[in-house]
Amino acid sequence: METVTSADGTTIAYDRTSDGPPVIGLHGTGVRRTMWSLLAGQFDDGTLLAPDRRGRGDSGDTAPYDFQREVEDVQALVEACEREPVLFGSSFGGLLSMEAAPSVDIAGLALYEPPLPQATIDERDTPQRSLADQTAELIDAGDPEEAARTFFTQATGAESVEHWPIWPECVEFAQTIPRECRIVEAFELSTVPTEYPTLLFTGSESPEYLQAGIDELAERIPDSTVVTLDGAGHAGVATAPGQVAEHLASFVQQI
Image 1 (cartoon, rainbow, N blue to C red):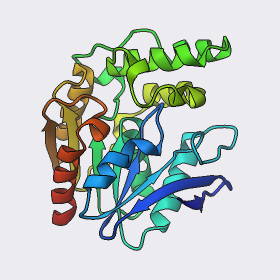
Image 2 (image 1 turned 30 degrees about the vertical axis):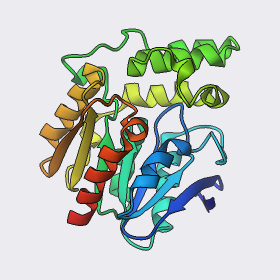
Image 3 (image 1 turned 135 degrees about the horizontal axis):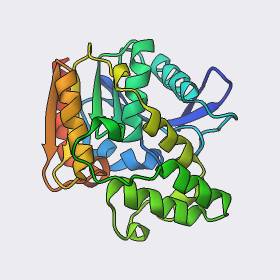
Image 4 (image 1 turned 120 degrees about the horizontal axis):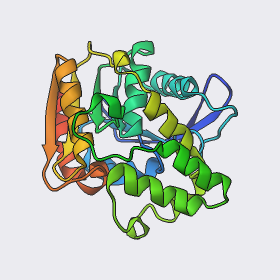
């Protein structure tokens, strides 16, 4: 484990693997850097830096939360690279990658189903009531377990999340779920960067609204390539690491 210090003094912990072109893996809501472990074992064509985003795992947190603090965390991680990295964001990490890209020197973007605001998607199966409000109410009521369960069920279409490898660890940082849901619900597509080579991942078994979000990004980003992972859902980075590693390696080698 290595660490960087963000602009507000928060310590961000990360793992670094191998040698070669750097890729910074930014995980999504409700998980931590361990979600990259299987991919790290199969990605031999570059250096994978996988941080615990603030508020969980071995990283710190500083109140009040602000999305720009996470951007500053990414800036610190980019500075730890010896050359321009690829930002690889999974789910919420994809939104963070897009938000941070204009403020750092990077070689490209890889995005796995960033959850775009519902208003931009024609076909969707997400709840009409704010997921941020639902999970915040459960946290305030002292039920972080139900908050985590509600989030994964409604946001990813998951069933029996209690049988996932991330359970029950994800309950420990359930307090980070509402704040990230609020960022998703307010995210503006006008901020999507279009000037970078971009690899867009989606899973063949993912919810329709997440697949539609990738279609939307493909239309907006001229230099983009869409890869659909056969048999994978929203957690494809962890459940289909071989497919992800193959396409990521090819992308990194070409830019």
